[in-house]
Amino acid sequence: MRRSRAFIPTTKEVPSDATLPSHQFLIRGGFINQQGAGLYNYLPLGKIVLEKIRSIVKDELDKAGCNEVQLSFVTPMSLWERSGRSDAMGKEMLRIKDRHENEFVLSPTNEEAMVELVKNRVTSYKDLPLNLYQINTKFRDEARPRYGLLRGREFLMKDGYSFHATKEDMVREFDLMEETYKKIFTRLGLDFRVVQADSGAIGGTGSKEFHVLADSGEDTLVVCESCDYGANIETIFESEEEIDALNEKSYEELQSQNIEEKCSCGGKLSFKKGIEVGHIFQLGDRYSSKLEAHFNDENGRAKPFEMATFGIGVSRLIASVIEQNHDENGCIWTKSTAPYLVNIMVSNIKDEAQTELGEELYTKLQDAKVEVIFDDRKERFGFKMKDAELIGFPYTVIIGKELANGLVQIYNRKEKTKVSVPVGEIYEKIMELI
Ligand code: ATP
Ligand code: MG
Image 1: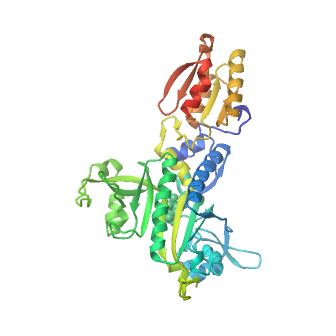
Image 2: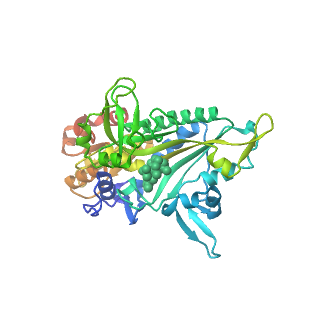
Image 3: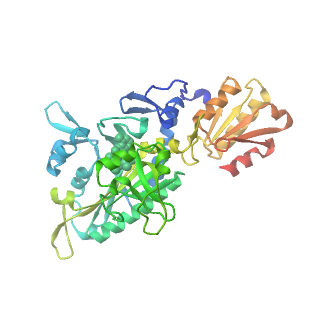
């Protein structure tokens, strides 16, 4: 992509409600813009990052044997009435009426619709297990939409649902998904923790959350410093007062606080802040019983499916990468999430030799299928460099004055280092880096 042709409206302006780095930098860097409370447009850079995350999620799920589908975003109210969730979902569920006064819902999640899809189509134990997922828009009329993509009203979620003949098989799939999610978050380059999220029981396996560790996280976690045990404090402290009192504490206060209950491995426990980016849940037959979704077992007896459900906050992940990776100048994308890996910057666009080398390198990298952007704008070097810092390209090739001595520079956004490379070696050096 040529920067002179790209729609990347970077700005110094920050909306007054944007308090977190990811919210500020994603807007200032021209990745997203706000359409309304909790509603965001993805501009070209935001869309590229979203698609990169989506494709990593899809790749790992498909390898683990899951099937991608796409359900209708608008669902009939009758579905929610039959499961009993029309009341339970409360005001978060946005209800609409069509011209015939029929009631519908903008899907906040899709357990009911997925059970309906499988019901009467999967009838025998021989057709099980089955894991279906989609990466699709969700709408939750959050009481307080805030923090940009971290808590929107319209957002993109990967939601998966699995169907099994026995509880044992459901637990096997649950464990497989835990491993698959770990692969996904590792590939995204994130520092994360898997924590117990089931009510009250430390060590239970009913529900697990995946948290990206970041000071701005809304959840408080207890993690062991020696083993991989972790729990959301909601599962450890019984009373809401206790939990509220801990949240209200600053991260520094929490870190210095000693926890009396020790981990079962004997290791020291400490508090961390996390952003929930994934949640996996053993459902059992809760939905299949209510919605009368049955299969025939080996003895020909009709039984409700054993189910599990698996969610990933795909759009929340974009912001989570930045909460974990930024500095005062802007975004620092991980290699697998960067909108472009290499930014070629010609310092003086009027200098023929510089422009020529820029064009040549740009073509060569494009031919090699490297994600490259060429900053060919007639702007000052300082301005373009600030822009590159804000957006956060991992590598910027600076073609400037040193070219007279046969040298160009590669700037590393994360390390904030510049290395000089002879012109003849620049292509190989970039290929080596990425
Ligand atoms: P939270 O506790 O943050 O409100 P949740 O537990 O209600 O989330 P789930 O029902 O578990 O959310 O949904 C699966 C995933 O979808 C979550 O782990 C989270 O990453 C993402 N998600 C949920 N609500 C939002 C939202 N309002 N905006 C962006 N992502 C969201
Ligand atoms: Mg959750």
